[in-house]
Length: 199
Image 1 (cartoon, rainbow, N blue to C red):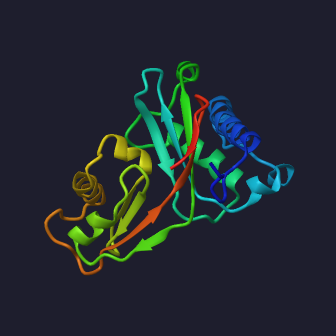
Image 2 (cartoon, rainbow, N blue to C red; image 1 turned 135 degrees about the horizontal axis):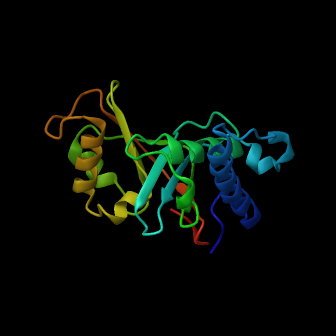
Image 3 (cartoon, rainbow, N blue to C red; image 1 turned 60 degrees about the vertical axis):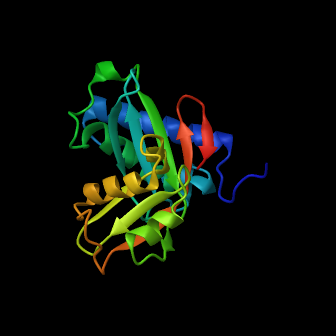
């Protein structure tokens, strides 16, 4: 099977996981963000990319997930910052404690560019969604929300997926605002457990 365009090589994936963990450990010790010398990293890690970093505890329970959708800074910088935010700034969880590090699993999602979905109603959007493949962003001008492709594992039905995404955004599940827009994106997933795939 040919490698998808933009796929990162194994060394780059390992580096990103190491940067994510180092960023978290450094912030635990110092309370400060990791200061990276971006020029010291290979070109692929200096390219602007958007990322999400997801943390799971020893029991595979979600422990934090923070990301960004726009590629406006170097990939390595995005990963370091999002890892720190997932560990200490996800409002759903208390800040990570040192004793949690040993069992912490890190998952980095590197986003490919957003692609608009031409849909003027919920049925049109549902019909175009690709379960298990698409990350989806919706925006009505005032509110926005996204689900990564991994969310399909718990919400495999496209209607349920979209309903929960609209709920997350605070957009009524009944009305379809004229201003509602949707985008899809693919991600390159990098797991600290050693499983890497393109979704």
